[in-house]
Image (tube, rainbow, N blue to C red; front, side, top):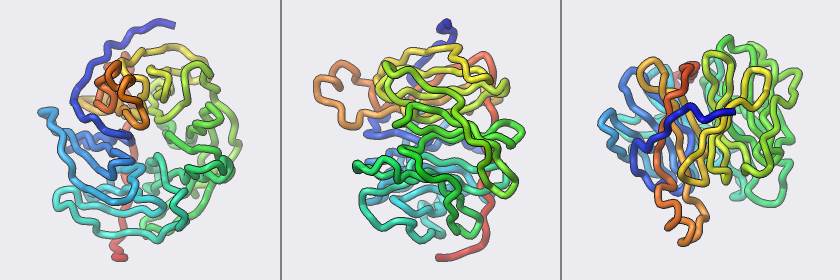
Length: 297
């Protein structure tokens, strides 16, 4: 293993729990959330950060739609946001009304459906599940009994889904059918225990997977066979998620967190919660868009 990627900070955000970065290639914008802060933020090409939506709920994930909007999660439901107007155009019903549940990370599949992971923030560590949302924002559970579902990424051909169970310290691989079902689920990689827990992930064009290690202060890269091939050190202990963006998807943007850190830890790692980027040797796979339907709820 060798460190070959030069990392740099691109914006000071001080997010409490930064997550779910999404690159808008048409407008050269980077969207991301602050889960506990209930915010959807955007970074402009001038590296200026602004809040486009503020919620009293926990916002777990977001993705772009085919109409230039954002699909995102609020607690245990999903919604469609017009980012230019800051107005929610549609929302789903909640899949669980208990406050201990919320949606976590999410992404869109090749068919334009939104997949997001439901987590339980209490002691019930087998209550997690992956839910699939269609264009009418109707939900269907497609994988249950996950301790803490997290990052999701599809292979370039769309036939394989990678997803994280942070508690199990594992990245799983499954065959993904056109109907949005998971088959032949198996462990792709188990991350080192001394490096915290795996969080968000992103795939490059060589089928290599990048994973953020929460409480591990680094990014790891696994080759297409699940072998650890690279480690990139971070100046903060809690990298959370990543996505490819920029010209030709040659940059890997990284969100971080300062959630639950002590004053002493924040003094030692003052850049916690900020945005970072590296430029790997291989560019990334573009993410899919959510296919909207004309609905109003």
